[in-house]
Length: 190
Image (cartoon, rainbow, N blue to C red; front, side, top):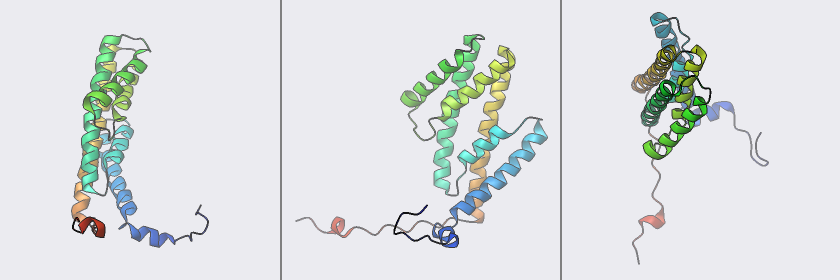
């Protein structure tokens, strides 16, 4: 819905105003999803949804943004994965280990790692790991499935960044126009 007094711009005009970033992102997601689906299904018979979700989160048409997101996501994924594995091994079969692991992952991500981009990834990854253990009712099988899911998340992140880098070579994003200096900022001090 448009604000009162504002005219609606045609879709084509909106597509072109940002150098087709939405189209570029859609293409990144299409290519990344296709590659993940083929690779994961060829290697194992598992569902590649966690790898696909991670690829989407780590992919961006702007390389600088993709690198920043990738770095933050990998670090917070490792924090959550380690917390989930430790709590699963130490915590027994109690369902209380899930909220405990999530709280620990949030605290470590917030106060120790302190990378606010994708900081929610730590508790999400801890939940994936713990849920695998709760579902399997076995520490060893849970750890195995948890590690497998964390590796899928990391694989998706890596592939998302690789697709972004490849696409930036094939279809570079134009640098945004530099902001003209504000006249007041460039005037000499009195």
